[in-house]
Image (cartoon, rainbow over the protein chains, first blue to last red):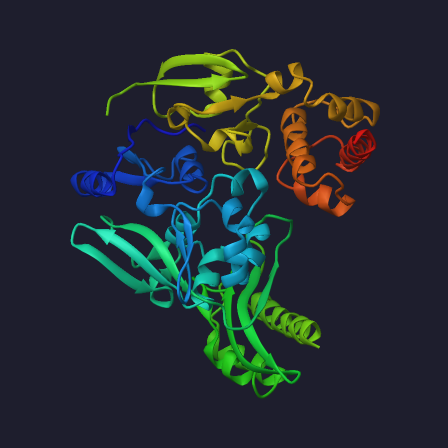
Length: 279
Length: 160
């Protein structure tokens, strides 16, 4: 199907975009890469009165290394994120995740911030920013605020963003260990049935510290705190601890029990790969 | 803001100006406004890849971008890429390998394969399959298409 009629605005400044958003209220949607929004429009799941095209707002663009890590603008395209040498240096988990996001034609348009604001529970980037302890910078009519990534994702397509706010960027501390990234999907480029994003600090052939975040299993990207802590003791204990961390939800691809099983399998594979690489 | 918007852009090296409704997507703009029917539409939600075109040198889904967003952009379609000869070797390989049956997916397949070969001149078969995984073909079973892309890659390598 085709998108329903809407009015179109392309503000030149962030303030103008925020004003349009405030004035239009619930009838407005932000258009960034459009790779989730436009399908929803074409399928008539949404019928906004106004699309506010935020492409080109300078406050939302660019990748910059900072003293402690890296700042990634919300409008960074997936392809640019994956190709960035600075991202590969500071947050290689993101570099590892990008090839799993849809397909080249979609990665050329889809944006980093769009994926975070969309908050699909099976998407890669929300899990990555939780694993990397990112702070998300948000602008709204009441000024700017920061929200920790781990507090940002609330549920299926639900975030801490208010209707009148715009996500500007993620401030990401430098990654503290070797990349752990794996996902299982029926085909290359599909949303994950189950995925694992995280990092592990390996010392003397042992995992000394780890951060594990699962996606595609629950209603949002979930930090597996019990499993991350148990991993220092034993892999079997960590896999068992996933029972405390995860509340898997069945979808068209897999039952809750299968997702729980796959999460354990991913954890075993990821740790084996991290230890092999470190050896 | 208004009900219609005037855009100026370049399509296959020619300047174009049209006044359009914002809801018009790029594929319908190309087909209905410009008569460029080589770009096909099918799923209209980004899954099938039939509508693949190039915008500012990068492949995109034509069904997931509105023409109104493309003021000032440079758009290239299968028509322009065929006439320039940019795809001639891929097209010859698709023909030779029987990688075309009904032809509905071919424009998208060719532009996607071309994008792959530009960034990775010597792809493995797995890399070819991964690159084409977002383009559906319901006739060939893909094997002949992978063969054709591999052949074109070899020919490009020999020319260098």
